[in-house]
Amino acid sequence: MYFVRYRYVSITLLLAALAGCTQQQNSQDLKEKTAQATAEVKSDAKAVAAGIREGWSRDKPLDLNTATREQLISLPGVTAAEADRVIAGRPYNEPGDLVTRRIMPKNEYDKIADRLTAKK
Image (cartoon, rainbow, N blue to C red; front, side, top):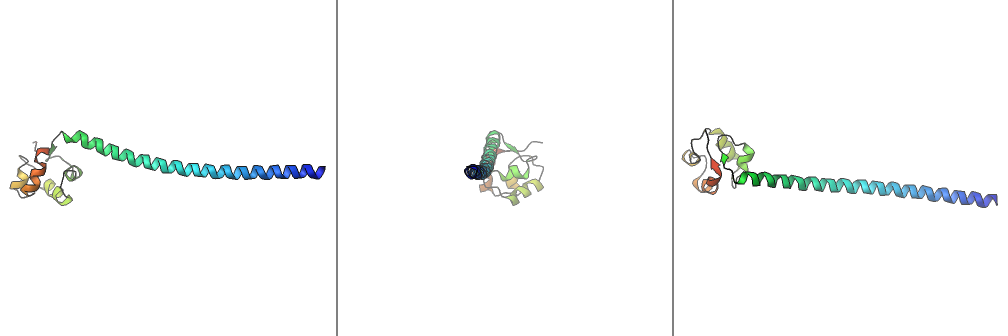
């Protein structure tokens, strides 16, 4: 009888240990899935924020005399080198100065002309 109880206790302890291992594994899986979901949400949030920034600035012309390099690059077709040339050529009296000073070709300027201003 003592042997049966001992065996019963041993089996119970073994099952409890196995259940604990399974719970530990499930916790680790849950932790990993949560981390992955958080990373995806973070990426989506950045895309939403970029879209909001673009939407806010769409109706407002970009001032050539104060725009940052990143803002200039965000204009359609403007390269990093062109943005650097725009910044180096400041100040501007009017947006058309980009063409007359040969900072940007007219065909590229025409694509963004409605999005530019030159405030003093």
